[in-house]
Image (cartoon, rainbow, N blue to C red; front, side):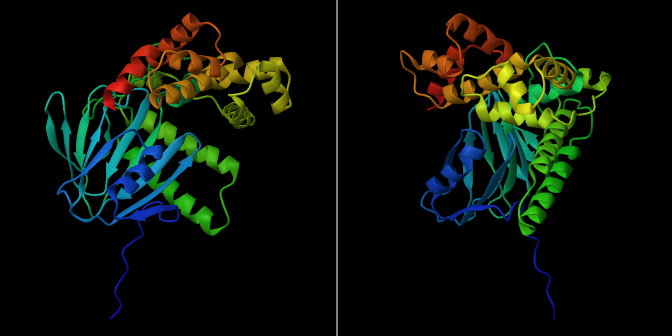
Length: 335
C-alpha cells in the first residue's frame, strides 16, 4: 500500500534552525519578524521547533513551528513595522490592553499600537510576513503617483479592504512555490526577486485594510519603468554612504533630469526624498534596536546624513507619525 507523504512546510528549502531550545528558536525568528517574547506553555516541556526564513527584497517571510506543548508569543506594538501572521491551524489571540480575545484561522495583522498575545498551533505553526511601513509607503506612492499625506497605518481585521484578504495568502503561497523552484534550479534572478517583493507589497496594500484604501481604489497604477528596480536597489545598498542625486543618476546610467522624471512617475517623489525615506527607515530600525543614551538619537541622525536634529525629527515624524524620542522610549519600555 502506497501512502502519500504530507506536503513540505512553506519555505522548506530555506531551513535556518531546528532546535528544542526556546531561546535559539526565538533568536532565529526575531531578525526576520518583529520584536517579541516567548515562553513555553508548560515550563520545562521539551520543544521540537523548526524555523525557515528568508528576505525577498524588503519583505521577510518566516515559517515557524515550535512543536512540543507549544509556546506563548507576546508581541509589543509593531509601531513602524508591518507584520502579518497566517496561522496554519486555529490560533488563540488576545489584545492585552482591551482584553479582547478569540481564535482565528485566517491571516491577522499585528497591532501597531497595542501589545498582543498569541498561541500558535505547536504542530502546524504559522507563516509571518514582515516589512517596514516606510517601504510600504514608498510602494503605495508608486501606485498613487504621489506621496500619501497621512502616515500609512493598517487597521484591524474586520475593516474593509480593497480586495478579499485571501489575496495575501494566495500571493505568499505563490512566492513560496517560486522560491522553492528557484532553489532547485540554482537561485533567483534579481529581476524575479524584485517582482516577487512588489507582488507581496501590493497584496498587503490591497488585502489588508489601511488608511490609504480609499485612495488606492481611485488611482491607476503606472507601468513600472525598466530602471525603477535598479534605482531603488542602488539606493538601498548605498544609503549609508555620502551619496546624492548625481551619484544615483550615474549608477543608473542616466541624467539627473531623467532620474527625477523616473522617481516622480514611479514613486511620486524626488530622488532626494526617495533617498531620505530609505535612510529614515534604517534610522528607525537603529532606534528600535538601540539602548537609550545621551547621544543615541544624535548618532542615529548623523548616520542618516542629518546635521540638524530639528530637521531629522520633523522628517521622521512626517514619515512615521511619531518622534524619534517616542520610538526610543517605547523600545526601552518593551525591554
